Length: 407
Image (cartoon, rainbow, N blue to C red):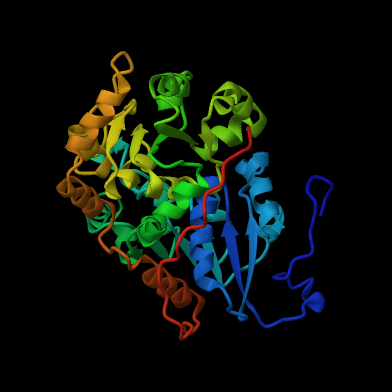
């Protein structure tokens, strides 16, 4: 290769085959553009554990290689990471993608999985060839799922039957490749509910305290984007002896601004007792342990509502929500946080409005295959690999205990 990009020894390369100790493996390329996609893809990789017929390698699509946080995320996990230019030169038996970024530049049957709460939640798109009103789509139109008249993935994972209806309108050629699998991240959260007390202890709760999780997605429309003093206000309102406040910031905040900067912004908050969850993992366990969630329009808030947690909405997106999506339902029924009013009273009101029926409704919108995502996804991966599935049954794995960053 030229001096523009380095080359690494690759266990899936024909050139490096003589180095292989186990040379007969089928190859799996995992495309990780950012930490959010990486977290979801590692949920999938757990379904391939112990299979000595497989060799997994990773890459960052070219436009995302400059995000150091993603590089660090992969480096800590110890996999072989191929530079993008090198990854594009090989053919793989399976490609796993948590984003459409770069999918048209790699070779091999691909499985595309959403890295948030489904593919059709937030944005709206107007069909170019019709005079109809706005139609709901997120990453499901032809421009997203097709290149040069060909569907990008052999398996497009949907969380809900409702998304199949959206796909049928937005990109009919992709329908034969769709797999309604439910949501593996949400399945892992529900499977972890028996560990709630353990997670709360790991998050530092003392007897009698309530756990308030404050969550923000990224962008200027997010809760933290609109109110950089978000955590200041919450901590000022809630007595530390009765409430433990834990913050969740979208990994893109950490990746773009840098971990040092985020910790610097929140240094006084952490010294005053804010528990800050790292971007890679821990947010799901925090939701399992939560008594209250103050969250914006991000997927974290809808997951929390699906777990039955009382919600205070802290910010809405700039654009419209898709009618019938979990986010739109919460926007209709969950109370809006009003920072000028006493927060404890608002938390109590949100709890009173958090009925079992609401939680059940949101759960029904998050997944059409509750508890079944792991089995469905493993079957899809082995189908694309053209391998017989392992004999062991597959169930959702419980989540690791959360950790907090040191102040």
